Structure formats: structure tokens, C-alpha cells
Figure 1 (cartoon, rainbow, N blue to C red):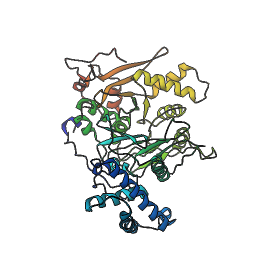
Figure 2 (figure 1 turned 90 degrees about the vertical axis):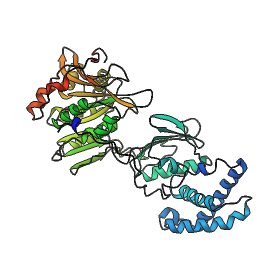
Figure 3 (figure 1 turned 180 degrees about the vertical axis):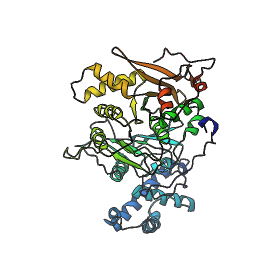
Figure 4 (figure 1 turned 90 degrees about the horizontal axis):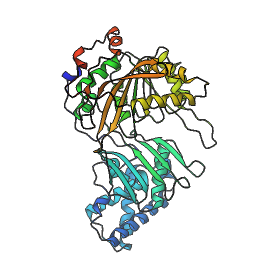
Length: 464
């Protein structure tokens, strides 16, 4: 049955399990929301009380906190005790409702992500950007907005950054002022500290839905059309090499996740990423993740190293999260030497720019190859380019699907199979039957000619 005949209802987002390092229950209200109506001096006093309780607990439990010898229940008990012991010293009252929130905030500060607990628990937030301890922004439905949370000061802010990086197996200091990592829930984090950034440290967290999106979800969101989805599903089944292209935040990883879901179960898939983000719901998979250099500058394992190693692992398909350098050459060689059906992504604004970027990255490999030979490799390796864009309203769309037809002289020839007249128009077939349709038919995945029949408002082929 074709994909267009089996569209499903888009599942409602649901909250998944909390990471082990974040003990505060997701259902609890955001910490700052409970205090925003208080007078400034009351809020400041509560922060002072929180600091006093935290200091008393740390002084009592000592190394047991960092070693994991103290359970969350034991820690909660000690926080409650020291709250009751210290509250009389401050000119503020803590009622039953404020007490529960207060204890949760202290636990979050000591074991979790502090004020970021609330936004990390919000499934509608896809990006968290901390420019300073009191300057936090989030992205929700493709739009940026200030978050109603902040840290009490630069110290607690930096502690949360260090704690996140520790969970991800990374560290940051003056000798290594930049770091990338991945949290237990799959969130990708990036931190950079002075002197590479002016002011305070900057923390960026990219979050992913607990339930991976499907092609039906993308159709419901108007990311692409049912006909285009059917074509892409056939392309993956038919082992075409696909390049997903787009700018930052256009949904390249999401599209790559969806495309990999169409790989037959009987095939061995090896994924290669800087930070493991792909979620392949399949039994036979191998996930490889690059490793940065250690503090001495040694031990780095690059994407290119992993691509070379993957070729020795008997893969049916290789999926590279993103090509950024010399690994582009190894990826092209893999596509040309028996690993058809491989997929990868690249940062580019158009399909033509994507090919040009691949050319440039191949030259980064250090091989003294003539440009003509590089273009020959690209023309014979890549079958389709799926170009993504981000609308002004934040929606992510497939702007066009382009076929790589070959090479004429020194030019890689391309043809749009599906495209849009404008950013708000539907993704429609151009009316031209792609050459890869014959390849798909030979591999047992025939496509009806009607799938490529142009509508009345066929998109222009001029845009590249």
C-alpha cells in the first residue's frame, strides 16, 4: 500500500522518562513561575535561604553527594531538615505549596539542571539558549522567545554547565574552552566560555522529541506532500544514495531519521555522527560516534576515521549524520563501491550549493584530485538531493527534491522532480519523470507515471 493511502493521525506529544541525572519530577511547576508575583526583596530572601540550605546540606553530606552514596530520598530528607532549621533566620515565610517547590529547586540545583529543569521538561521546546545566567531563550514551534527562568548567579550557572558536560563525558576549562556533548535523553549540548566569548559562558541545548516523527507526521505538518513522500520511500527501498541539504535548524536530522525508517529490516546499517542523534527503530544497527581530543590534544577520532572503519564492518548502508570535511571523499567512494542506499546531510542553501560544498570538502581530504574527477565521483555517487528550508513562521519544509542526472562536460546536471513555486505553496511534481525511476523499477520498486504528473501550477525549474 502506498504511503498516501495509509496516512495516520499525528500522535500527540507526550513526556518521556526524565534523565537519571535530573531527579525532579517533570510534573512539578516551573520554579520561577511560583515566585514571579512576589516582591523583589522576598524573592531575593528566598534565594538566600536556598543558598543557606544548600550550603548546610553540602557541609553535612560532603563527598557522598558527588560519589553517589547519597540517595535522592536521603537528600530530600536533609534538605527538609535544614530548611526547617534555617527558615527562622530569614524574614520570610514558606507555606506548604512554596515548601514543595523550594525543596524541588534545591534538589534540582544539587543534582539536576537547576532552573533549566522546567524548560527541559517542556516537550514543546526544541532549543534552549543561555547567553548568561539571567538571559535564557527558548525555541518553541520554530520561534524564539525569552524563558521565564534564570539562575541566581554566574556560579550556579557554571555549575550546571559543568554538570551537564560531566554527564556527557566532556569537560571545559581555559585550556579547552569549547565542548560538545550528548545527554542521556539524547539532547545535544554545546558550551563555550571566556575568553572565547565576551561576558559569561554560553550554553546551547538542542532537544529532540521523545517520540520520533514519522513520514505521516511530516505530511500532516505540510513539510512535504504525499506524492513526494511516496517517492522518497521508494528511493530508500530502491537503495538510492540521498543527500539531505539545508541550513541550520531546517530539520535535516529529523528528515534523515524518517528516511532511515524505510530501510528494510534485513539490512545492516552503520550510523556515524559527531554526537549520536539519529534514532533508528530497528534491530540490526551499529552506532558510531566521533571523539574529540583530550586535554593533552591526543586521542581524537574523526568522522573520516569512522567512515573508513565502517567500510570494514560489512555494512549494507552507511548513514553519516553530517559531512563537514574530508570524510566527504570517503563517503562518495563508499556510495560508488557497493554501499548503495547510503544517506548523509550537508549544510547548503540550495541543491546546487550542496554539490559545490561536497566538491570543496573533497578537496579538504588532501588528495591531489582534479576538479573534473571530483565531479565525476559526485555525479556517479549521489542520486537525489532533498533540499530543506525554514519558513519565516518557523515551519520546516522540503523546498524541492532534485535528481542528479550525470555530468555534461565539467557541469553536474540536475533536474527537479518535486518543487514549490513559493515558500507557502504545495510541494508538487514538475511533470518530468526522473531517470532513477528506471533504476528503481529494475530493483523491484516500480513507480506509477501518474506520481510525476505535473499539476496546473507546476513549479519553475529555474530556481537552484
